[in-house]
Length: 249
Ligand SMILES: Nc1ncnc2c1ncn2[C@@H]1O[C@H](COP(=O)(O)OP(=O)(O)OP(=O)(O)O)[C@@H](O)[C@H]1O
Image (cartoon, rainbow, N blue to C red):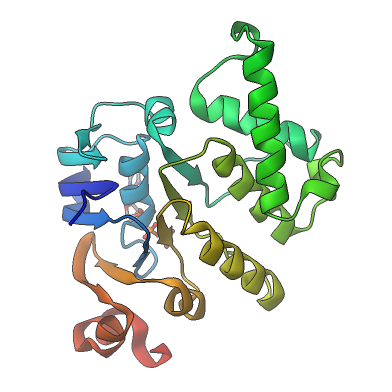
């Protein structure tokens, strides 16, 4: 089997007495969508922050394409290929859609505007940002302020920001949150296309979307992975149904 793109090994993270991550080992493989599901407060965002570099684990390792990146900061991990979107929108509303795609990519890659020489680099990044906007269906709105976008379009812009960096893996935190059924369908279709570009670690509460998209699912409860498996395995797992899925499976 080829090496996982992202791998966590025995991650542990405490907040005081609370064990937010308990010995979490999982991996994201080439070509797949691996969904992480679980009740509110189970530790999904804490896990993602440790993968992306916003939080340091107390113990354990994060590996990116076989390299131990546990000590690396967010910008270094973004440069190394982690394309992340956030649960809470981090867009600059007064800036245009294209500026957001560019600035988001700069910010994520840790470059500063004044420092890059490089008209050439700028042109390269700009054309990548435009291609990313095209990819998510926002090329026609490149010059519009982000404030004019609908909620679903903003979600797509966040994905375009991640795409601009040509990531090796996407880490998406609740991309369907707050969307209606039409918006959810659009993002589902988009993620289905993007998986061929880079595998996706997907935290999502919308079970219809998860069941439609995921190749594998890991279920997190009280900071612990209680099951990892293919969709049908997870739907049929009695412990998972009791802890989280209930009748929705
Ligand atoms: N910085 C922090 N300090 C203290 N406790 C924290 C901190 N961050 C998260 N927690 C706690 O850790 C636990 C896991 O939180 P986390 O946000 O990772 O869960 P989640 O599964 O992402 O939840 P949701 O589905 O609601 O987004 C929760 O009990 C939360 O209150």
